[in-house]
Length: 129
Image 1: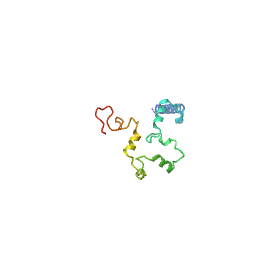
Image 2 (image 1 turned 180 degrees about the vertical axis):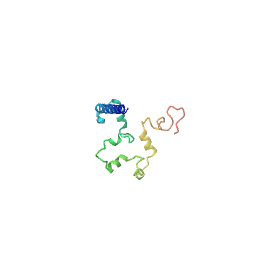
Image 3 (image 1 turned 180 degrees about the horizontal axis):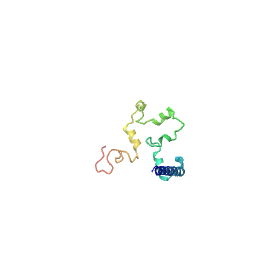
Image 4 (image 1 turned 90 degrees about the vertical axis):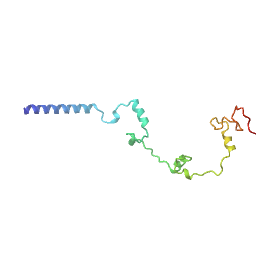
């Protein structure tokens, strides 16, 4: 009985060793040896810059850190900037005539359906003079 048990254990160990060696020989040693598909490239492109991506720690970090002047230049006029409350506000507020002059010919203007006097274009009501 003991000889059958030893023989079974020896056979199992030999098969396990042979199977492990065959698997190790057939598998790539690093992740770069895996074939890339277009789907993997699409996923990688979509995950670029995503801090929740598993590859975020391996991202390429630029060597140039932006200076304060570069950051301030990009944040000029941004209402979400921490310096927006400290911006220089011009003393001159534009008049209605100045605003209307810049809106002339703009199809997205609020007053694009009105003529110069304020009456809707094509209306039968007389214009106020």
